[in-house]
Length: 326
Image 1 (cartoon, rainbow, N blue to C red):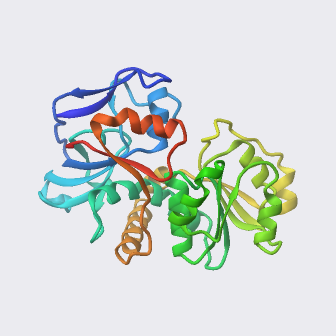
Image 2 (cartoon, rainbow, N blue to C red):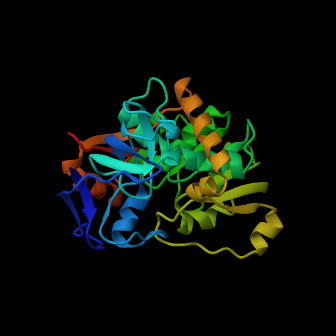
């Protein structure tokens, strides 16, 4: 089969190659899946550099998540050959065939195609875990979403709006503002540069944001501490800016807000029943058309470099999806 293999770590993608390799052997408790689509996530890029908290042993097959059709499964797994499934593991998605534990798969939502399903899982699970599970989101709250052109940021905007939030989306690129507005349909799109607190205050009538969803970090996090309402939550999702911010503890003390760390995958591993419930609710929302993942482009896996470089160069508005069989 064809698979995108990381042989060595590099900053310029030189350690990756699309390679002919034996198909994986299904281990006990696993399900063998013919991958029809697999989406690119920021951790995939970081793992090629050795810059992510999870550092798989070399060589490894890149890719966190996919959608496809079951080839083989134990009868007690809940899956059967031909089932349309979505999910994945920390690695292995960018290949024609993947073998993953049954617990890491779920049925595809009705009416959704493979590309959409591949683009939905990790992003929407992250958004739901942060907004609902950890922050107790309530309808009508103001949610400030940074990095709104990325897959996770767009998912957070989409989900928050579907749940009844008033959403302010931010971007570092003026050229992306109109596309974010069309895809995410927030109440407003603003530039996350300089002192944007005044814009947040004006939009919210002075109450500021009940929840700040921050995959960016750095200067954006620093200014976000000024944008959180009293008793609000600032969710640390990631550090796409490249700088891990620090905060003087008197700031959350005086303003009475909480800083919440979000690792959706770890949350689901520690609380598997909640993880299943999250996936079920996301699927329900997708089936009724309340949420829909935004896809920037669909590429054959042979054009993997184009997708990775577009992510590294911050060209995307939405997810990249690879089709291994194309």
